[in-house]
Amino acid sequence: MKLSILTAVILFQSSMALFGQNLECENFKNGYFKILMDESVETSYIIRNENMQAESVKGNPSISEFHIEWIDACTYTITPTEKTRSELIGIPENAVLTVYILETKENSYIQKTTANFTDYEYISEMIKIDASEYRNHIKEISKINSDKEEVDKK
Image (cartoon, rainbow, N blue to C red):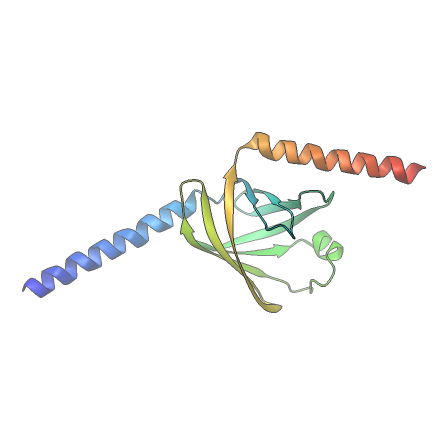
């Protein structure tokens, strides 16, 4: 009898922990984010609504767009748009990346990203940022593009 009560309590607590994790993942379906990279790779900035994501890398004037499909509350796939696929070298036509949210924190989550065209797995932290930080990044991209246009005119 004591064993069944203990088992029931453990199962209940486990299900509550899983349920709580799913609710926390919901907080990251929309918003502004950045992924801090190491010294060899620049920071990426992302804007996401539930079904689309735009991503840009600090210092790079291009913006990549992806379709998002949520598999469950903590797993989603991103597929490059046709325009993005044509701009990215080495990305196959059927490219799909799968993102697994492994852990959530107050303003960030740890994710593991895999792809259907490589065995490489990447673990990173996605940090939620405010709109003003994202807008500042976009202003930097606009300036880079503007400067590039001036050079191209000469």
